[in-house]
Image (cartoon, rainbow, N blue to C red; front, side, top):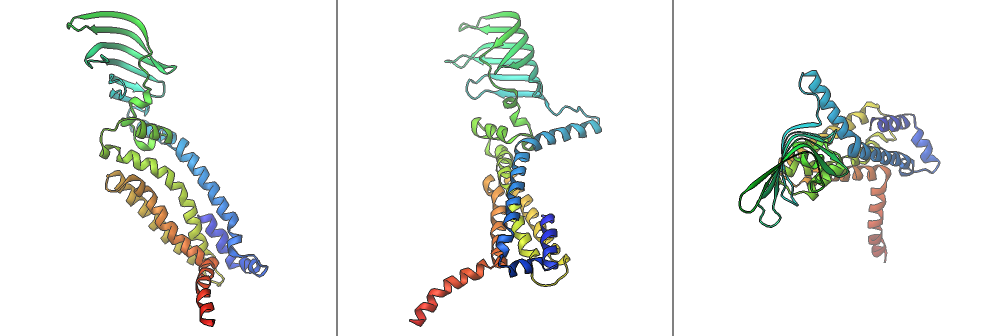
Length: 311
C-alpha cells in the first residue's frame, strides 16, 4: 500500500502521469500493472494465511512460553476428552502430542454397536498414531459381556485398526483457531459435530476471515490510485494523510466486525466479508471517478435524453 502511494505520488508530482496521458495512455491503463501486482500479493497472502501463518503462530506461542518459564511445547495438550461422532468411542488422555502423534495414559471406552453399552475398556500407557490407526502400548483390556461379567487381558501392544481418529481431530476444539491451518479449520467445522453455535463462532469467523482478508490488497489499490493520482502540484504528504485515514478506518472496521463474529453477534461470513465489500465499493467509486469512468457513465446515461430532446 505504501509502495503504491510512493510510486503514484512521485509520478504525479513530477508530471510523469501528465506526459503519459499526453501520449494517449489513460490512467486506467497505467494502473493495470499495479492491479496485477496487488493480485499477486493477494495470492501470496492466501498461501501464507492458509499454510504458514498458523505454524508461525504456534512457534511464537512456544517462544513466549519459554520466556515466561512455562511449558514450551504448544503441540502438547493436557487432559483431553474426545468422543468419536461416528462410533461413539470415548477417549480420555492425560496428554496428546500432535507433533509426534502420540498420546500418554489413555483410557478408551468402546461401546457395543447395537446396545451402545460399554463392551470394552482399554487402558494404555502410551498410544502412537501410525498409518491411519492407533498402536496401543502396554495395555489392559477389560471386556464386558451381556451378563455383566468382566474379562481382563494384559497385552504389550495392540494395533487398533478400529481407532482411526487422528490426533488433530481429537484436540481440534482445544486449539486456538489462528493456530489451525485452513484445511484443518474446514475439516473441524464441516466434518465434525459441533458443541454449540456460540463455541464454533470464532472458528467459523477465522475460516471466512482467511478467505476475505487477502482481498484487502485490491481495496488498498483502489484507494491509493484515488488519492495519490492527481494532476495538481500539491504536497506529497496530502495523499498520504488521506490514505492513512482510510487505512485506519478500514482496519478498525475489520477488527470491530471480527470481534462481533467471534462473539456470535453477526454471522461469521458477514463479519469477514462486509469490510471488503463496503470499502471496496467506496474505493471503486473513488477509483472510477479518478480515471474518468464515472464521467463516461454519466455521459452515456445522458446521451439518450439528448437524442430524444433533439428529435
